[in-house]
Image (cartoon, rainbow, N blue to C red; front, top):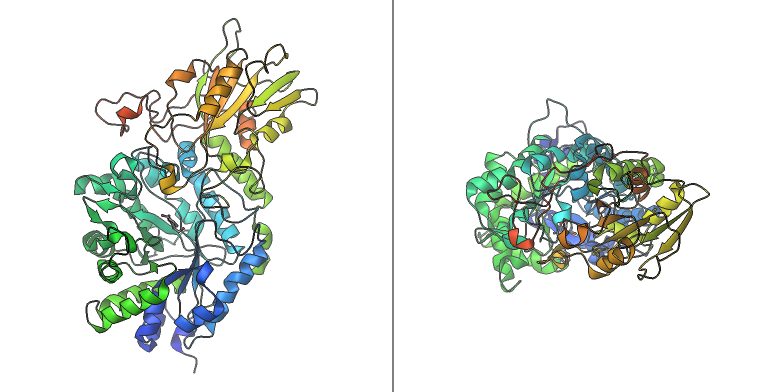
Length: 603
Ligand SMILES: OC[C@@H]1[C@@H](O)[C@H](O)[C@@H](O)c2nc(-c3ccccc3)cn21
């Protein structure tokens, strides 16, 4: 009759046992091999028995590819997998870290630093659920999210990917996993992967462990601390993720006290698998095993040996897969890597694939196509923008009795200025359409300038000037100005920054505009920046972080349709020489403390 592992009425563990015993070493190693879509094809998947494909940041089948083009691509790999001897489906992973951000037209949510400032875990769960739908709408069952780093130093280029500096806040935001994967029933065993159906995805808690604690926030560097601190500050959110049935965990590029995480058998196997009882699969980061040696790939055999023996189950190779397969095969044949290690890895990978329903529904569900950028998702993103904004300053220019915020919708003439006022790419930040992000109309959404124009009365003239000089504002009869400035997009090491100053073009605009006009400054940034020299020039200051595609949420609050609710997810330092400085530290001396956030009602 039908082979047991293909029978969905059987338990997952019975199906794994039946399938594993049928598999050759080559087929097992194929399951442990993840390749990038650029080197993947139906033929490669079939020929090498590749188990996993990923979408690197910005990698796409075409410019502005439509959902069905993405689905055709993923289905093509699936056809290759289904035509192998055992027909084990591939699992296709993508970085959907603030919406389905590689896909043109997808809803782009505020990056995690802003979501952390909302202090609303239920909002974040809803974002997870909406994101799962958009990921599935392109035929993909796996998202490399959430990043549950506890960023302890804003000089880190990935600090905006962290929900905040405080472990308890990050722990509360792991609720997004229940949105992405669904919520397991109370009877669900802790640590066991859970995916609640075809509109949910496999999630990935990342990056284990201590990615946000490196020295000076240097990306992929060394986290020097006690084991107790590592557990209390950085590992705690993984316990919540595991309790929620997170299906996969990605290992961090960084090191703990000089030991590369990708070579750290104690933390990866002894702690994460044995003591914390994680039963899904562990995935490496991109070419992370290569970087176990310095220089990278100096000894790839050693990289493969130590990472697999450390307990990593799936290797994000992602290009040199023949080499990886050959080396690992040789290591098993020589006994350097045991059969039982390979079987543990494959068992975990199959467990997640069965839990995700991939054997029953390997191909894309084409009925979900219209979910990409759906109006209700954009409304959710707009709500998230509103709740993420942090009001740092609100005052009245001398002589006036009223604070500048909320802004009047019926002023006769207003100025909107700044590099970030009318630029969708800049307000989305990194990990948007491309890996590093970009400027201009990179996807579909509403800029802050458009949002302001949508909000003011018909009789209000909105003048937009990106970088006005001092004369521009003179004697023009502007009632007030909104100045939107900030950081250029970045991702990972490109975002590492030791001085954290506001880019000078923005400072010039603040000076040119706010010296003679009442102005509210909206700061678009992935982290707190040095403010003191400039804040006195502003009548009001809003930290908008990286709000994403729905700029309408900014106008909703500036004009008083909604009040500010955001509480900063990070300490706003005075000077970088204070860093690292986090809430609770001795000598804590912030400009604005962790949790700071004004409302417009308070005087
Ligand atoms: O996109 C896949 C993973 C992502 O999930 C991880 O969070 C992130 O650390 C990461 N960096 C690269 C990456 C880094 C340098 C060059 C090319 C790619 C790839 N990836």
